[in-house]
Image 1: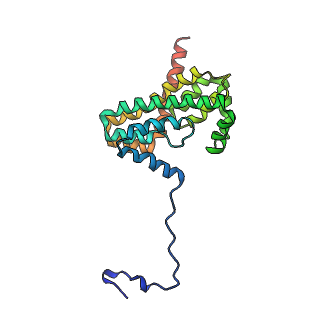
Image 2: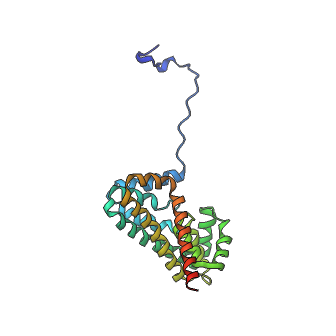
Image 3: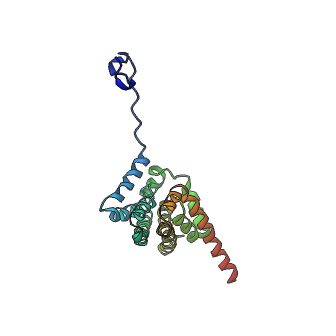
Length: 223
């Protein structure tokens, strides 16, 4: 039978009609992303930002930028406050990652290789530490390169990377990254959010190239 409006009643379907497939469940990363983002709409947004920033530096896969952007958009005047605490928690998490690699190498290897699937990066990071550990960590701290890989391996290769090298590079890189995001939203608002959502990796890589170029220029001028 035909219902008003042109739709078909369920009884009009053949009895043996196949059941429509259920909508696929979102993947783990997408669910974690949504879970991180939902904290922006709760009174616990800052506390969640601190926790996520801390654990992302050693094992959590979702970067804190996701929540940082949402919080800054909700309260632009607090953008720099959010960026400050995000950087503090992230650097502290980096120190925790270093401690894992230093004191519990098997656990560190399991996190990097088995849990996160960055096994191919292990030897490459070790090689980078042999060249310039400070610059390697600074780059990872600022760009989309997985920072957690560098914090844990820094602890494993502590004979090449001191905790002070890790902390110094992390303070500069993490602060630069988060304050760049917060400053852009504070100054320009919603249009920047759309650009950051889409091109955050491009912006950070460009800024990192300029930053490294500045270091090279300073070194050349001071020779």
